[in-house]
Amino acid sequence: MNDLKDRLEALVIDCLPDESHFLVDLQLTSKSNQLLLNILIDADAGLTIDSCAKVSRAVSGEIEALALIDSAYRIEVSSPGVDFPLSSERQYRKNVGRELKVFLQDGKELKGKLISVSESGIVLEAKMKEKGKKAVLQEVNVAFEDIKKSVVQVSFK
Image (cartoon, rainbow, N blue to C red):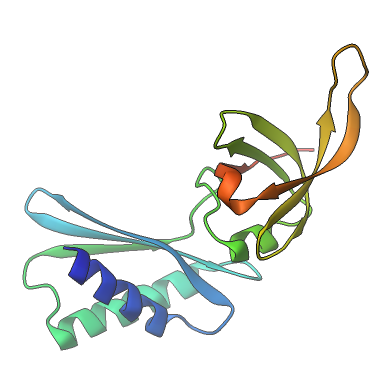
């Protein structure tokens, strides 16, 4: 199954409309004797339903042409959604200026505005509270290796 997943990931990347689109995740699951191929893609300037449909058609055509899957399967192509954790530097860059909740490897949590992204990590503007003092806005550097999970916080303001 891992070999198939690797081949499908490469195929999806080749089927993306242009350089602004990227693969976020690909999940293969089996349900009721049918393989489900769930493809999560994103784009630097936002993803459209039309792009998802084009990728779905292109991937289906390639799977058939290459005979990669010989049983019943279903393809779903969509964006990761706001509740899906950020997983790549590119996704972080796309969300600069937005509020994030960052869960750290050591069990701590940070919540703040994503200020910048580098190859090694992110900078958050977060309210930091020291014992006996009022919370103050500070820029906090967080290395990618220290991040367990980051989720964009939805604001209805």
